[in-house]
Structures are given as structure tokens and as C-alpha cells.
Image (cartoon, rainbow, N blue to C red; front, side, top):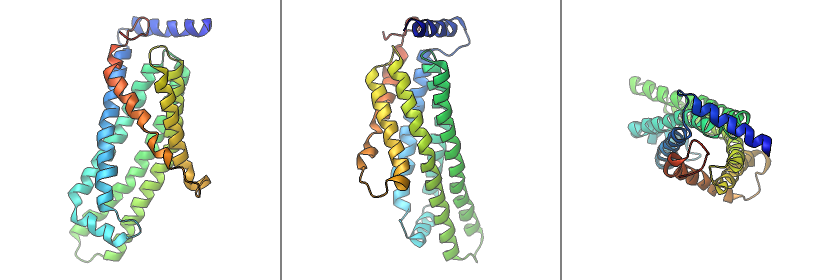
Length: 249
């Protein structure tokens, strides 16, 4: 216990003595703003736009919907892109915020979010393919509607499949983040428990199609509320962290 306290104290002293270092308050605010931006952009694309355009198991109708609402579809892509870019910002800010707890574990935790983000951006390229198909259909009068619909649906399914695979790494990130919060002295431990539960939910959702296809575990989709509560704490209480003793004002 004494060794851990000494290491945390040394990390704080190093952060405070370096005038170019990002403060815990700033890191908390940046992380909170990044999560808030994602909480707006991601639901816009995932819960508002895509359900209106994509008809499961009906490639032709999906293609028609996208062709008739190209601006809305492109807006959804912007929402996804903003979300994934904010993930990069959040990974860095959360690393800085929790570095005083355990620098190596905080870095390890950040890498899992970075891996997830890279996978998500690669998956996002499938949506870019859909945009290219749209551009080709707009400039060509002889394109095959059936082939176009099949290519669009294939790209959409590839995006979803690859992105959901990346959520496996995101779930691990949240679990490790929760462990760091539990070990910290300046963030409520309840948030650590909620983050671990959220990470567990993402892991179950990512593994269910492969390992648990016949088991009803719908509760996992509600565990993400832990992220929202953590975001609110970062925005409201995070900027009030004392730099010297890692306590709240």
C-alpha cells in the first residue's frame, strides 16, 4: 500500500512540475466533451438515420431508401466519423486522467480503445464504398439496380460485422478503465463498478452471435448507461479535481 501511494505521489509530482503537462482537470473536461460529442453523433447515425433507411433482409428497398435520402445517409456517415475521431481524443484524455493511478495500466487501457477505433475506422470504409456506389449510380444511366442493391447491402453488413467485432476490444477497455477508477482516490468507486458492468455488456454483445446465439441476454444492451453517468461526472465534477492531493473540491 505504501509503495502504491509513493508511486502515485511521484506521478502527481511529475505532472505538476511539468508546465507543459495536461492537468487532470483539463483531461477530465476533454474526455467528458469527447464522450458528450459521441453521445450525440453516434445515436443520430445509429438510432435515427440507419433504422429509417436500412430494411433488414431487403436489399432492394434499402438501396431505394438510400438513393432517395442521400443527404441524410451522408450526414449519418459524418456522425460515425465524428464518433470514431472522438474515440481517439477520449483514449488520450482518459490515459492522462488515470496515469497517476498506474501509468502502465492506463496506457494499456488506452491501447485497447485505440485498437477498437482502428477497427471501427476500417469498418467505416465500407460506408465510404456505399458513397462511391451512390456517386456511380448518379453519374451512370445504365447501372443495374439489382447489382447496386446487392453491393450496398453487402457493404452495410460488412460495416456492421467489422464494427461489432471491434466492440470486443472496447468492452475490455471499459473493464480496465473501471479497474483504474476503482484504484483511484479522486473518482467515485461506484463509477468504476458501472464501467466494469458496461464493459461486460459490450463483451457479451460482441461474443453472443458466436458463443451464445441461443441465450437471451438482452440486459446487456442497458449496461452502457454506466458510460453516460461517467461522462456526466467528467463534465460536472472532473474540472474540480484538486491537482495536489487528487481530491474533489
